[in-house]
Amino acid sequence: MRVAILGDIGQHVYHVGDDAMTHAAVDELAARGVNDVVLLSRNVEDTTVRFGTDAAPTIEFPWPYADYQRYLTDIRSFLAGKPHGLAPDDQVHRLIDTLSGCDAVLIAGGGNMNSVYGWLLYERAAVVEIAHHLGKAVVIAGQTIGPLLYGADRDVAARMLSRAALVGAREDSSLILGRALAGATVVPCLDDASFLATTTPDAAPSDTAPPADSYLVGTFSGSTGACPRGQFVAAAAKILDDAAELSGLPVLLLPHMAVEGEGGVDETLHSEIAAAMTARVESRHIASARDTAALTARAALVIASRYHPVVFALDGGVPTVALSLDEYSDVRLRGAMANWGLADFALPLPSLLAGSVGAAIREAWQRRDEIAAHVHSLHPRKVAESAAWWDLVVRALQGLEVEAPTPDPGHRLEVEGSWASDAGAARVVFLPMSAELGELRKVREDLEGQASAARAELQGWFNSSSFTLVRKLASLRSRLRPRRNP
Image 1 (cartoon, rainbow, N blue to C red):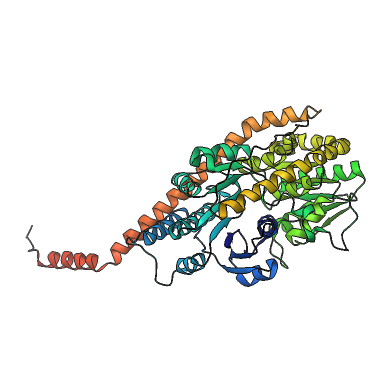
Image 2: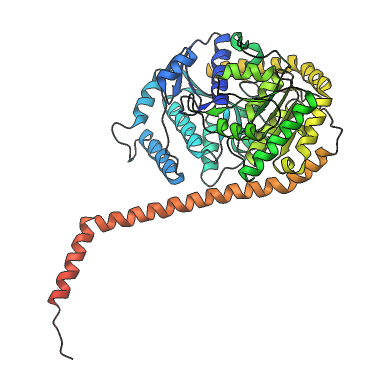
């Protein structure tokens, strides 16, 4: 069986999390006898080298809201044999050829099923449309679904999810929304890369890695959310300094997004945070997904505003404190922590400035042995649940019937400090405001797209031969009109 796998890979800006999920998908399929895969990528040569598999170009959607809506409409029309705006050499024809040579399609896990990354949502929708048209089985692996699905995006997501034989939702909120959109084919699962750090042959750290438990890890997104950058940098530097003083350990800042050899994104923010710190700190350049996962899972404590550092840390039983920058990141980070009974250790952005994050770090460190024991006690069960999920994935790719799993929710670790209730109160106010702001941004993008389209249509009319003729007739009429004396 030949399976096409779509992950958000081959980007100019390397993203540890996206590569990690695709690595995991390739590994898990291979472990079940599916070794014939082709990865859909933006950089075929790079992907072939990184993954050791066949690769083929994916389709790249434009970023503006109106443009990616129009492009998906054209693809649907083309597949239906209706009038469309696709050129004979459009990239979609190449993708159709690729998927025609496959038996099934796997959409690797991720956080792309929302309007925040609408062009990626529509790319996945287009791949599913083509696979459905060709009669290929489709499975969509561990996803964050929503929370923002603006306008037509909700119907696009519902149609895509409904056409899959199996959909994995990696948080409870994603499961609820996914089932509202597509029904019982949406089932609970963990993130695709949940055990990349500890259960793959290449997960051992390099010889230059520091000994396990001898360092703290910090990973911060290049964005600072609604917080002014300078204020965020100062606050992040303080909590890391305090954590270093509390533990007596140095800090490694491990980026998850940057251009290899050039930096940017996380590396830029990390360098600013390191410059503001007084403790021992090393701001590292971006490394491969496997190396980053292994290094994170061997830390003594992890503090992160990105998703996959949390996933890697929990795989290793490492106490973790997560900071969400908005509603979207809160759904993901709190969901990842909740899967291990540690939801309270995911705090919203206002908690960084109010001191709750610092208090959570102190409790996580003081109870590190208890937290590690808690996570390790759940680890075998979670590994078994993940294995059962991937068994279902392969069955669904083969066109066989599947039954929804019933994961054990496990035991929730209760926190001791009042910081958790303070963070909860901040979340009640902050998240609805963040959600409203996200939707307003999408409304503005939509309106700007409509205005741009209207201007283009008007300009097209001005440049048309019909308008030129009207102007000539109007000019001629004005010259022929008789003059009257006053």
